[in-house]
Length: 150
Image (cartoon, rainbow, N blue to C red; front, side):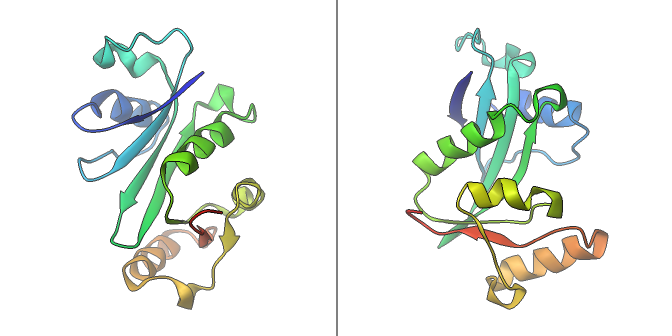
């Protein structure tokens, strides 16, 4: 497996991957995206990569932190360490506080990567509003963060 950071304008294959995983969101130009690619991926054919993407995660930058969203691993490849390895790649490139809103069943996964639960009133204002909007859709989410240089 190859783990890489991608940037716009190469998001078309990533967005195709997200749609194939039944995710409604898509990567935008202001985000940082990391992908896990099959070992035989040929870097000279980025547009053909949609079948080679095995996992992806998006980070939205803010002045003092990042908001991690949309970590997806192909369903048939889950529980094989790909998501953890992808997140370790993220952490090796991003030395800043990272917030995320995972589903409750993923709490242990994120804790093993150095994330900790955050009290809602400790969230930055912009994230607090997002969290409240997400929570209206599903009360099955948590607020977590990983501090810089964790």
